[in-house]
Image 1: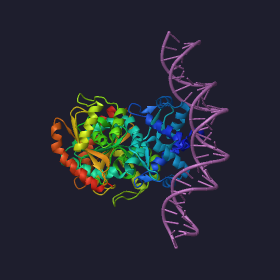
Image 2: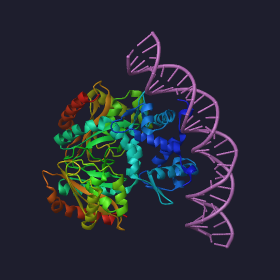
Image 3: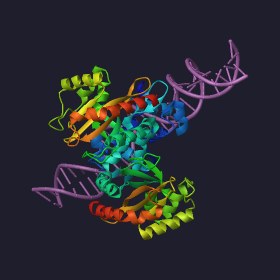
Image 4: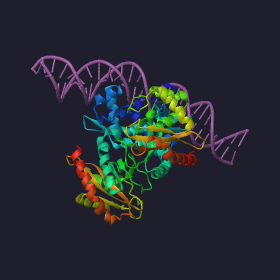
Length: 251
Length: 251
DNA sequence: TGCATTGTGTGCGATATACGAACAAATGTC
DNA sequence: GACATTTGTTCGTATATCGCACACAATGCA
């Protein structure tokens, strides 16, 4: 791509949107400039543009995003047929298992939820389409990373912040790479409280009709209720059934 | 705002993102140009920029959004504390009622879901944070429109596409304005299969500690199970309880 | 008050971008 | 195969935008 095929004003604007985050519902121009590492004048123009288009509110001091920005993300969710196709299968799966079922895809070092059928919540965090979790310690992440070429998976691990969320979290890249090989061979991944104490999950890859891995689905359960050792026996058959059904409808 | 405080390159880029929609998962440059009414060369630069930043994939012919664009929408969901605060209350509400409970805010002529606790699905459409429904025929929409000044509500109705989704849908602006007055006086709105046959819902406004309406919450139920006439008796007390609890924690 | 510190708004020159037009390549039509 | 149409790409130039520098306002502090 030629350099002149890049609209830096657009790129800068997107950076400004992403500057708003968990702990930053409202930003001043100067704050946004620091976070994005852009000039104040530039950030000011971007924020005023956002406000003018209705993507942000401005009270003369603080800028805050409006619900309109959800349309940008939603363009993906509704544009890709994947979430829509998977949802009913997930509902059925969740009901049969009596546990929450989810589907996700990989984006960089994270898994992104694209659909979810939840039973009574067991996790402390609230997951919904768009939510993200680090791939290395999530069951769907393991499955999706295992589907990549070894070098690619390794590259993603290198870029990941491998921290121990619980005493059980595997953080050694070598151990993880070995785990990916096992997942690839056996076709499923089980996570035993590596993300959060008290939570187990099991995931399998979802392939399209050409055999390409396009997503992962999983079932999560409270460890107190279903020990990790039992996850496979209880839920793998259900997951495989769903995986097979999806393979026939995904192109 | 001075004209020079507007970054048109940014605005054009956002327009291009929004061009991707339900029936358009993949777009060529020319298609996107038609949809956005921009020059092909301009759209091409925007799409190549999106691809370069990882917000889109490009196979040489078609562009498709990647899950990364969800980060833009998620910037809103995680930036505003509202969804996070409301979620646990919604879970409790949903459990007590044995039905799905949701929270939403107004954006233009639509309500936007910001949180949801779903029981077994009764709707044909899948709702999750970010989903949108026309305000005029949704229970939360009625409540949120009723909270506005009459002129504002009227203005939104004028901009709305008032179509009859079912034979029961109210589409006459006068009838709707009258309904808003009733909602304002009585503090709740009931929808009897106006959005979808077989679905009833009841909503109340959620106020912050200064009494400003910041969102709406609702409970939806299958009409076959809970007739519209019973919605008030069964669910209004639960909704009012949640509303009161939220008023104490929202500032 | 004096003096930093922090934040916002504006003018300007250098640079980047959009537009329209032109061309090449692909596609559809007869 | 010839022709018309559509699409992707490139190019020159008029215009828009960026980043910098500076002015100004508000706040905190000794």
